[in-house]
Image (cartoon, rainbow, N blue to C red; front, side):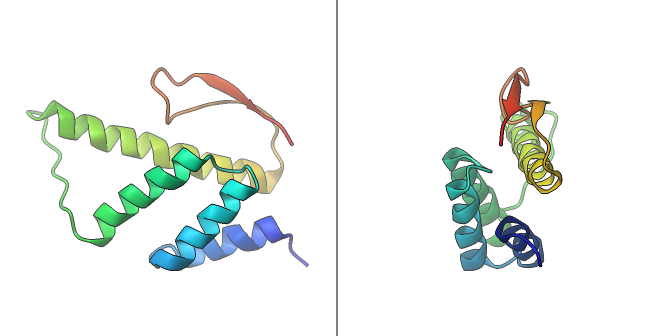
Length: 109
């Protein structure tokens, strides 16, 4: 028997390319305090760009587009870590890659 949280994560990973189920799963993860509301909103924005074919070009001449790609990558990395930390039951300090300067914060049960 698996936990509800594990079920959400497995479903999340399995259905990553579907819009409606992901929104509901992420909302459940927010309700469980695994992700923040802002992470839910940011995920939807990134997902919408990807799902609707908005092309991202990596150009070192356009610093704002490069910064946006790096910010989104850091955000997704933190979401991934938070999900993994939840699965393995990790509590303690970690770097918040979604925040400038990567501040250290703590996870508690």
